[in-house]
Length: 107
Image (cartoon, rainbow, N blue to C red):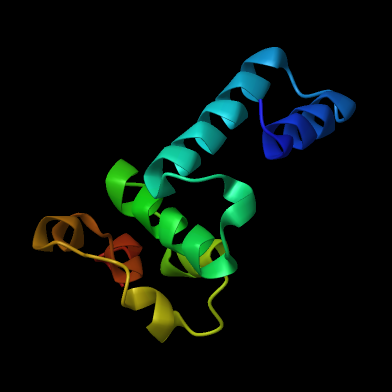
């Protein structure tokens, strides 16, 4: 187990995180290592952001997640920066409900 994993495991145990969640967190660190083929200790901020974008795209986490939340996850100051990373399909757009749809027709 490398230093990052040891520190992470110690922190998770200190916070009383369940063993199952600890295992999931450690598995994600292993995926990060595999994605870049090197230790997380060697990665910079831009590489971590790249991996977050990869996760959003690969796992479909962006579908149904507001642009603002994705922006916060990626640490972007402007929504314009975030939209560069998001791929919105026509199918997803068709599923989006407009706030106007909830207004009763009797008005």
